[in-house]
Amino acid sequence: MTEPDSSKIQRSYKFRFYPTSVQRQQLAIEFGHARWVWNTCLTWRGHQYRVHDKCVSGVDFSRQLTFLKKLGAYGWLGEATRDCLMQKLRDQDTAFRNFFAGRAKHPKFKKRAHTQSIRYCFDHRHRGKIKAWMAGQLVLPKLGALKLKWSRRPQGIPKMVTVTQDGAGRYFISFMCEETIQPLPRKPNGIGVDLGVKDIVVTSEGWKSGNPRHLRTYRRLLTKTQRRLSRKVRGSDRWRRQRVRVAKAHARVSNTRQDWLHKLSTALIRQAGFIAMEDLNVRGMMANRRLSKALGDVGMHELKRQLEYKAKWYGREFVQVDRWAPTSKTCSACGTVQKAMPLNVREWTCPDCKSVHDRDINAARNILRLTTVGRTGSDARGGVYQPEVAYGC
Ligand SMILES: [Zn+2]
Image 1: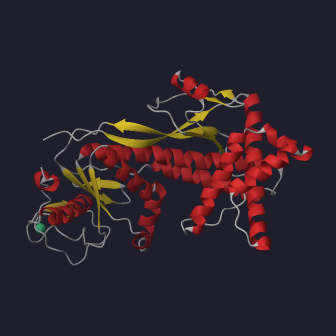
Image 2 (image 1 turned 135 degrees about the horizontal axis):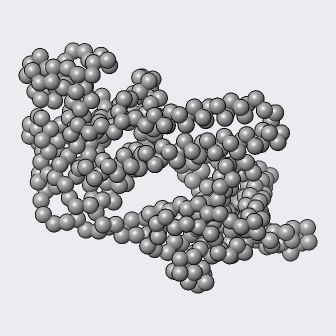
Image 3 (image 1 turned 180 degrees about the horizontal axis):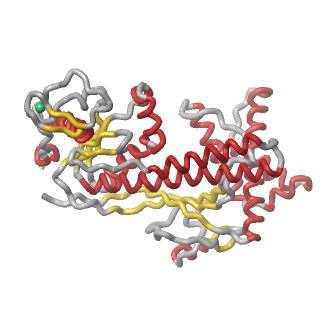
């Protein structure tokens, strides 16, 4: 058996940084001017379309912008980095392309209260930036070196760096790097994954993830801060301060959830070479409200997304199984289907083969069995995974 080849992937990075007061002032200018350019261009496009029946692009607007900058009244546009303003126009062009292709909604006006973002080009033309990057520094025009903690050093050089400020007032940089990933050593086993309320994930090998109660605690914090916001006078100072608190609570909930999900998906990827999970059918989940709420809370779609890309990165296989199969009612040992299986039955004994089942582990075993039956073409009752056949080696 040969080890799988290392593969090139696009890895995204996001780091928080702490600007100095001078940098904060400059960033406020960059964000504000970029927002002005976006909104003005959007209005102009709409006007050109409605009145002159013309479709114009960001390139057309940038010509207008060069002209405006020369006028005294719009001289302030020169305070911002040209690169960032141009990038905003390019982004708007992309947004319109997606809209016309039916992939996205019509671009909207940007508001000050939303997350602010600007993007810097970072290609071979920018020698100084790249030299600093190699030395472990991030230098941006008009800002200088940014103070940031590299929790993990990126291997490559990004083509573009995005700077954002969220509603809670925190600053981040994010970018993508091409990197090589060494796949994990191959594992011959396969696991089935059942989703539930008491344990978010139960595998066919009997591993249970538990359900993080802290998520629920943070949710309560979120509802409380939101309730307080609704009691304050809109637009007042107290209201504004409370709104930052709401944004902070949101950030906390999503960070905690994201952290837990990453640990969970990595644990699953490490455990097996082949992972089978129930298909997430939102409408089906809605039928059972308690389950759908619990799963929505932890972000099942995010878990699926992580498992998908991590499987690709580390040379694992990930499949989803039709969730309409009676996985909890079927005995994973002999294959007989029970008539009914109420939700409160946690453990049961099969009347035919007398084996004792834990409800969730049994369901997970059936999920695995469903995939292996189709894959090996033989009767794989009992969920025995045959890697030689499946991998074809
Ligand atoms: Zn049985």
